[in-house]
Image 1 (cartoon, rainbow, N blue to C red):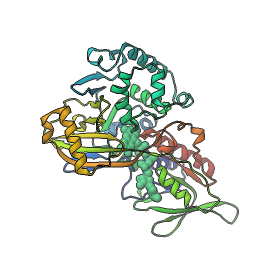
Image 2 (tube, helix red, strand yellow):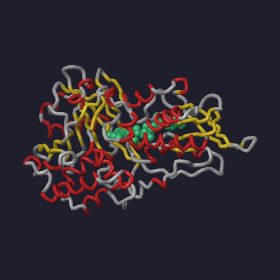
Image 3 (cartoon, rainbow, N blue to C red):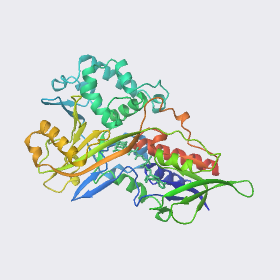
Image 4 (cartoon, rainbow, N blue to C red):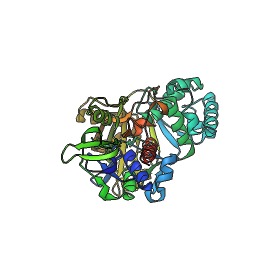
Length: 429
Ligand SMILES: Cc1cc2nc3c(=O)[nH]c(=O)nc-3n(C[C@H](O)[C@H](O)[C@H](O)COP(=O)(O)OP(=O)(O)OC[C@H]3O[C@@H](n4cnc5c(N)ncnc54)[C@H](O)[C@@H]3O)c2cc1C
């Protein structure tokens, strides 16, 4: 019998395995698919590196900075700023989160006002003085309410915050918790938005390289769980795979996404623990190959019009050349939410919109792949982010981890995996 079975090989499960290894607790990790990394994945298509949905690593994430070797990942930073599409032209803004003093540079004036500049400076200095614990104790409201209370203009909301944060939260109404906003703002303000030089999948790969491969089983989908009393009074959990022999452990960590975790709990005989799970936020990401990048800089391009399908565009190969074969550029086009249109209709609609933004050169763009990701992030509409209301221990022998227990982010998944492993180690001591 193992000390611990970890179900799920995403960032939460991998971080938990690292922590248990450090604490000399034996573990077995069961992953349903044929690869580790969960939602952080990169596909190689015709020499292009396609992350499954546009994702970035914020270098200031404390857990990631602690655990990952950023040098080995060769992190490539975005420029601090964004280009905003205003419907008839672009304007380039200094990222007010990184360079608030430049907020009202001439180029930015169509995006924000003097009041916005003042509000950004106040917000930034308040968050610089706040710890992450402070943030998660403050009153929770939606990000939209929070920004309005802070005095930001509607223009700044529409042209900058909605597309910028909408792309991060996958929420174009900014209903997401103000705690998540403060957390993300603090991370953007104190570090860089980056891509690993060879794709986002390098992140879980680096974690996996530190683990004993003999303890990892791929293509091992868990079908059901059962908590049992054993002779001598101790309890154990029996984990049944879709195929093969049942496995037993003193502790089980559910490090799957929220829907799979809830499903596995529902397979347990009564009385069983309860797990409240959020709704899902979705996104659609289209990749195109182009003979030439439509912009030269490693900048995020935002839709500041409040209309249209596309929320944000970027050229990953501008910052990380390995994302495209030499002489070509990779374009990543993101839509917040899911689209009901079939692939061809969607590609045509996106092409038309991109033609308005970037002109006739878009006719030479070649569609590579579309990713429709239904369960991209857990919804974090308030009340969402009160750690005490999201226990990690569900029963005597069952723990849960993942981004749905913390912030919906790489940081959240990793920190939640470590916390759960720490608790398991304490319980087994
Ligand atoms: C499109 C997109 C964009 C994002 N952008 C960002 C970003 O820019 N910055 C950021 O910080 N975060 C971003 N995120 C969020 C971040 O990727 C996730 O928060 C994080 O990867 C979640 O990790 P996890 O381990 O909690 O869950 P997952 O990655 O979902 O891992 C769960 C694992 O459990 C496995 N599993 C499920 N059921 C079973 C079963 N029955 N048996 C065995 N295994 C099972 C799954 O196959 C999966 O491997 C984004 C996510 C997406 C999808």
